[in-house]
Image (cartoon, rainbow, N blue to C red):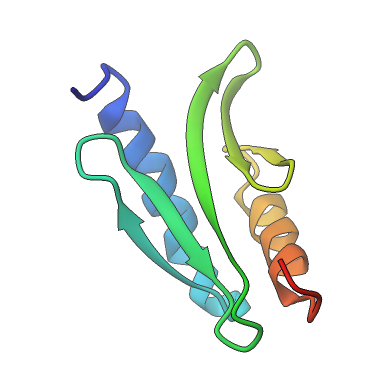
Length: 91
């Protein structure tokens, strides 16, 4: 069952997805009614799932392992994702 936040969540994830190709990252929205964003770095093969969730500080992006950034700062989020996925180290 979809939450009451589904529409807003999708808007935040789509905004992030639009910026990823310019940083060498590829994404796909998955999850149907409760969307998440699957992001990967084709060169390294590293990938993660991005969640958008409301918090007491406003909406946040969350990803493994331990990534977090406010949705209001898309550039910071993209940079953090790129840095995390660019590493040649195994995930």
